[in-house]
Length: 546
Ligand code: NAP
Image 1 (spheres, rainbow, N blue to C red):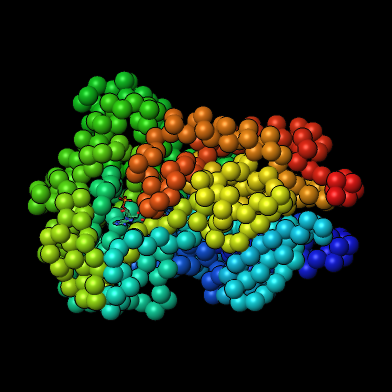
Image 2: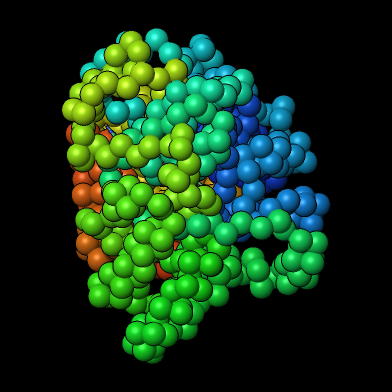
C-alpha cells in the first residue's frame, strides 16, 4: 500500500497524540489500515490515566471486561482479568501487553509533550511540536489526549508554601508513598479521594478528608473474576460485544425492566437493597427506568442511601455531613467504593466539612481552616481534572481561518460529534468534549475511533484530501447539545461534566446528551452522500479554493 508520505513529503500519515486507552487503539487501527503512524506521549510510559493515576487502590469502577478492548476476542481470551474491577497495576500491565501484542511500542515516543499543533494550509498538513523539541509533520492528527488528563489543583492561598509531601491523585509519583505513621490530608471526595481513604486509613497516624460537596457514594461490590465467568463471557462473546457496543451506557448490566410505579413502597425498599448490592454503575443502569427522570423516586432512593450511611457511620454528626442535601443520585458522577463510610469509624479518620469550616490557607506545615490549623506530613489533592477541554485548549492547536482552541473555546467547546471541528481539517479528538454520553467511556471512544479510521480509509480510497465538518454540520450538532443538555440529570452547579469543579470555567455541558443513538443518527446523515455532505474535500478542490 502506498503511504501518503510518499506523495506529499510529510513525515507520517497519522500522528496520534497520547498513548492511553484511546490512543493505543487509534494507533493500532491506523497501523492495521496501512497508514504510516506514530504516537507522541507525554508520560514516560503508556497507559494515559492508568499511567498517571497510580495512587493506592486506584481501580476500575466499570467491569474490567467491559472497559478493556473488545475488538479482538483472542485478546480477551488471552488476558485473564483477575477481578471484576481491576486495580491500576493490572490495568497498566494490560495496556502494556496490548502495545506489545500489536507491536506498537516502536511507534510510540514517550516523554514527548505536545505544545503546538498548527495546520499548514498551503501544504495541507499538520506541524506538531513537543516541549522536548521534536517536530513531526502529519497528514492526519488524532488527539487522544483524554478528558481527565489535566489535573485540577484548588485555588488556595499558600499552596506552594507547604514543605511536606504534596501529590495530586492524577499525577501520582512512581515511587510508592510511605503513609505509615503520617499525618495526611486528602482534599476531595470524588471517586479518587474516596478510593484512597480506605486504602490508607489503617496505615496512617491520622487522615483528614476535606469535603466540599457530599457525594452519593455506594459500594463497588467487587469480586474475583472466576474462570467460569470468563468462560461464559468468552462463549457468549458475540452478544457481549454487541451489548457493549449498542447499549446506551456501554455496560452489560441487565435492565430491571421496571418503573418505580410497578412496585409498592415496601417492594421499592427491597429493590433498593438489591441496587445497593449491585456492581458499580449497576446502581444507575439496573435501577428503575424512571430513576433519572422522576424526582420523587430518586429522592426515595437518596433517603435509602442516607439511611445506610446513618447505619454504617457510628458518629451521627459525621454521618449527616456525609449525606448530600443539594443534588439527586446521579446528578454528580457518583463514586463506587468499598469501605468508604466504614473508614470514618476508624480512630485515625476525620471528616472536615468545607461548607462549615472553609480552608483559609495552606502554609508550610499544614492547612488552616476557619476552625483552626492542622499539621500534616502529606497533602493529597484529589481535586479532579479540567474535564473535557483541559488538554485540547493547552496544546497550542491552531487550524484554519484563525481558529485557536486556547481562545476560541474559552466560552466552551464547539465541535462536531465530540471528535472533530470546523476549521480543524484532518484533526480528530476522540474521547474529547461531547464525546461520551456518560457511562463506560471506552465504548464511546472505540466507536469514534472506528468511525474516524473508516473515514480516513474511505478518503484514501476515494481521493479525498481532507475531512472537516462544515459550519452547518457543527452547528447542527451543537444545537442538539443545547436542546438536550437541560434534560440530562447532571447538575450544572455541581458536576464536572459542566466544568463546575474548576473556578472560572464556563458552565457548559461537556457530554453528549443525545447518547450513542444521537451520534449514530448525525453521522448517518453526514455519510449519506459520497463527500459526506461537503465534509470531505478532494485535493484538486482544495487547490481551486486556494
Ligand atoms: P472529581 O470527581 O472531580 O472530584 C474532585 C473532588 O475535589 C470533589 O470532591 C471536589 O469538590 C473537590 N474539590 C475540587 N476543587 C476543590 C477546592 N477548590 N476545594 C475543595 N475541594 C475541591 O475528581 P476525581 O475524584 O479525581 O474523579 C474524576 C473522574 O475521574 C471521575 O468522574 C471518574 O470519571 C474518573 N475516576 C474514575 C475512577 C474509577 O473508579 N474508575 C477513579 C477515580 C476517578 P466538589 O464536588 O465540591 O467540586
